[in-house]
Length: 261
Image (tube, rainbow, N blue to C red; front, side, top):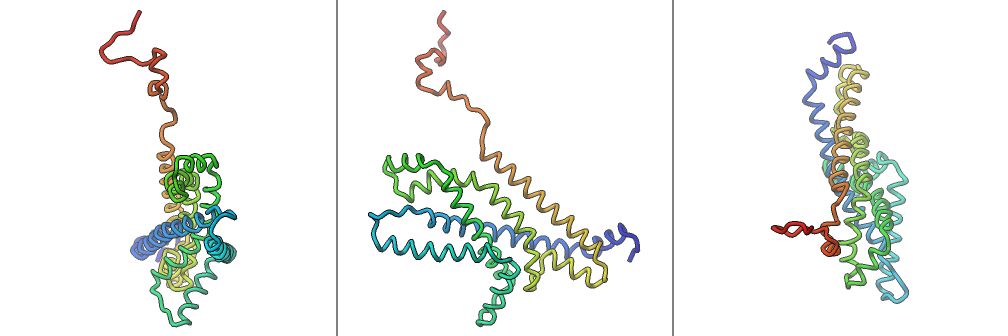
């Protein structure tokens, strides 16, 4: 093995690129799938937390919502208030102690998803509350139910508002999957740690690892920023020629007819 810094980096890349890429692939798989599942959990929790309740509602509905919201508040506070590494050990070994053995992949999806869902729940709740109440009142005025209002009016607008936070959660999950090494998940950090332990050389392998994490996070941050711009649509709209009032103001030209002098 070379003795200079650059030589060692090239040596590790030449001899262990397969394990590093395999670990990076596992990291991306866990982060992407768990972020998606976490977003679904967050949307469900956020919607339940924003269901309107008044004194005229059925007492059973009010009781169910009261209990559900209480349990969801506990869920959100527990998983936002404790480190993911502790959650991973508690869930994986706790279920193992209870006789439930999970595969490392399923355990990874479960742990990261419920952690992401707790953060997304508050994001979704804030996104829904950020939509002007006039949108909801207008939807109800034309006869839409609460479910239809949320599905067709509020959530599409809230989604655009919370898209940056979804991207942030994906990037955070790419980095935080390294804590899953405590339960034996062979992701990028675990692969790097194995290489470093085999050679008793740490600085060079972790330099490669840091560069790989940086490449992944920068790529996805740019991709998500591009998606945000696509969702924004054109910056300007030519509405005057499609306005019915414009037809009487002389701004509309009928095909085949010249302009009057």
